[in-house]
Image (cartoon, rainbow, N blue to C red; front, side, top):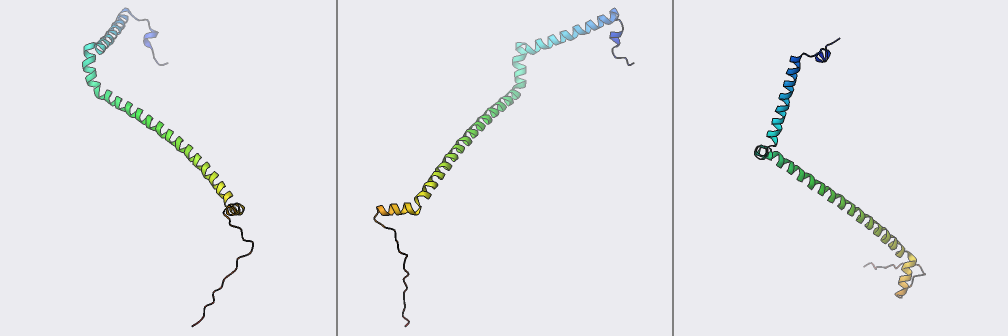
Length: 136
């Protein structure tokens, strides 16, 4: 069987316990000192801001690009929807005008409109005129 946790298997002597508690206390103090230095007014306001200013500016630029890209995408979607509605309306107009034109160009409709102008439909077939030229 491999030895994994030898400290847990054996009882700890007072010296080992003291060493472990001292190491733990040192780590806690180091962490507290780091946090105090990190969040102190003097260090935070000068060192961190000056050091991280390019990164913060980069993040602000990325934020502005994200916002502008989102705005442009929404405007494009709105424009596409508007153009789609216009295409549908124009398609309906085309179909209705085409149907109306087909109705107005039937022979009976043309005859009715011509009758109001005083023109009448021919009942006889057209005659063919021939021109005879004399040979000189």
